[in-house]
Length: 166
Image 1 (cartoon, rainbow, N blue to C red):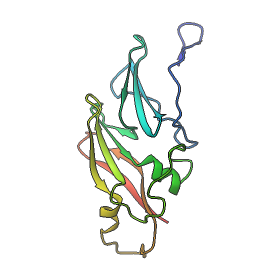
Image 2 (cartoon, rainbow, N blue to C red; image 1 turned 180 degrees about the horizontal axis):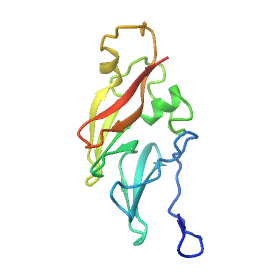
Image 3 (cartoon, one colour; image 1 turned 60 degrees about the vertical axis):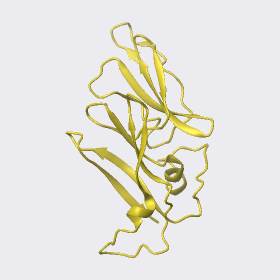
């Protein structure tokens, strides 16, 4: 972080082992906050996120990575970053292989919601469930499915995502 009021003083916030060319480590201010930032990291065999008070230096680690945060900073939604990296390098994170690399539409990969206060993660739906939804154009038989580009609505009551296949 750069403090513009103190001669552009550089303030280190932390490190990350979860970084990609397109989206970095998702470092961002928590919505509505002027004192807390959040970013993704990798610890061992899992992706996590850190919340840091930039003035107090208090840091807490949440058990999952974030992709998009609700406007009230209560929730985050995330795809499976392992699968995203496998299907679309540069958007997911390296370092943890996709256990479903050879599965076209896995039931244990999908979108999760995480409570940013408690860290409680809820699996919302799987790639397999969405791949079973009929489409009106094209043919997705034999295609490998994944999710990307999650975004909350302005009031935080809904979110959208891209369901992609190759």
